[in-house]
Length: 547
View 1 (cartoon, rainbow, N blue to C red):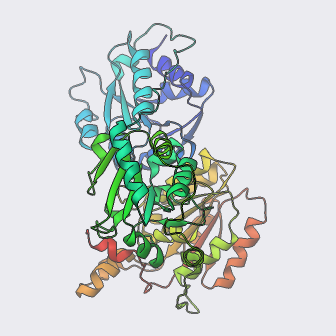
View 2 (view 1 turned 90 degrees about the vertical axis):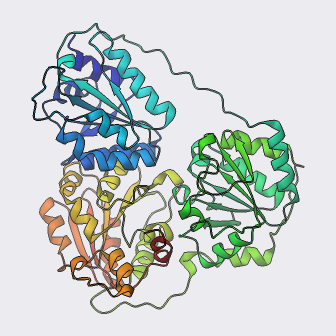
View 3 (view 1 turned 30 degrees about the vertical axis):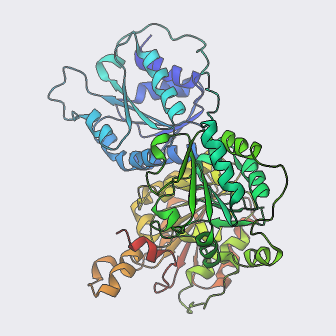
């Protein structure tokens, strides 16, 4: 059998059902083999979009995201999205071709391995036709087991040769049992929690992936703790009355106040990075910090840790519960505090509406859209001044439904993020928040949205500027003419690509969105929201401290 076809068949037998990419001469045969074996291919308009679609698909489904691109310029086009996936620990396999060993003068020749290693991804390669199937299985399963992007390179001379028929069935991947920390450390942590007067539990993406939620809520009952999350774990405890929402730059004033008063903080699967802790200033210096992580290297990497627990977040949380009396302790919970928390969310914060007849306040827009959304939604967001609006004002049914591709702080991948989420969970409406700058960077994928009839709601926060740069440098007296632009008619562009579109300048204009939501959703809707450019996002000041 042809080696490229064997690779394609093997990937489908490993479980790939849907995948993304851009076709070139180096990956056409393997891609055709995957489609012939039953996988559905979503061809993007740019490799940067394709890999981000695979990243978002993985986030909302929990499966390995697969993307395929041509070697050389196809791979370089995908590097920004690959870097985001690396920083987010997304299980992703990027399948690319490579020049043959003797093609020394090929225009496509670059040192692809060094390029991939430079951004932290894992390099894998088809070593020979005889080992091609084993090489493919190893690359896919490493991405799955280690939750890291792997780039599988297929040299042209190898993939064009013949190889043995791949086996009809592949041996199953045996998962390791969840790890537990040292018992001495576990007992010490339980003792600290038992003595706490104002305990706080912060859950991160690691806790979500481990399925630790119920156990952490039970532990919180035992010690009277309040609950919070990192941004990627948004809405994990949304039905718990003691949840403060997101810890860090997206915290409400009340949440930040209470987090700062905690005397013992248990971090479960959260890195406690500068965004979750406001550059370390949010947690009290007197607070004892206990951290759970399955990766020992992550403990204390961003924030001091007084007691480190190396283990699975779910198993460790249950282990801590077993060390404590199985009864509810009030801690700092009280009816008065519960009432304050209930009224302290962003959805209930008063503000001065700065809307004009021509432009809508971005907070008014966000609240208005949020009121219209159904319960079952995916939310995706691009990078930029506006990006906190989705985190603050739109609710998701579970953290996996919040595709927050912002670990590399990229602008321009939000639309592709939404596409990947929509394909991964077609049972949910996908709502994507973009700024005008990022929307124009990724605009080629509007045609992809239309071609696959994804039924997405795309909201463009259009301030005709790179808003973050405006608010960053305006107080410094810098010339801002380079980051302000003429207004773009996104509604017209969207209609040209085959989408429905509306322009929103006032809250009443959102009635058109309500009408669309009541319809069949067979065509996506783009909302060109002309937002007031002078409203500064509350989280932006924290972001400026590290730029």
